[in-house]
Image 1: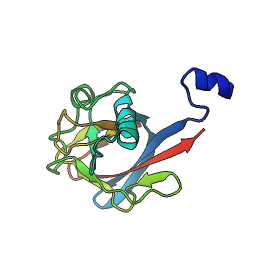
Image 2: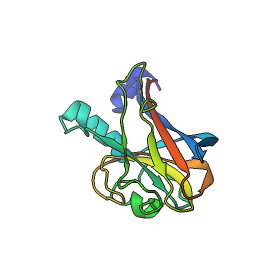
Image 3: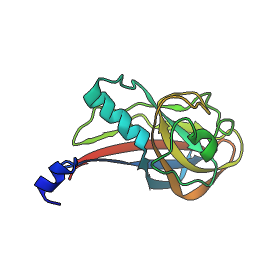
Image 4: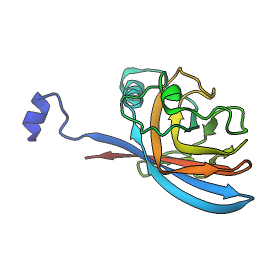
Length: 177
């Protein structure tokens, strides 16, 4: 698309891309037994929130959270915080922590932001199978307000035993293309 055509069609000549990866470590009895990476979908709701904060003076989310889901569900761009917990089957009783885990990110550098120094940790309260992870703006398990920024179905479902731990890192990257 030519720059002139792009400008007349309302599309920028350059575009901003946001995308991320969930990196998960699975521990059993203190021993690392598996790791995997899972690309995510950044939701329309999340993109609109980011644009409104940057350009329209909307209130920024001060703390994001990491949650897990147990349904065999593939997230889509149209997912929202209002419907995602039910559709994806958010894990609410399956892990011991009382709330979704805080996403404690470091300052963005090199067009990337991550919580790799402060991984979200989930301890299985009972045996269950986890299918994916997501990044919402509220801490309440099963909560349906706020913003759903991103979600990812893992490459394969993971069976957890009581006491297993998942350490979840989320890295989001931005690029201009």
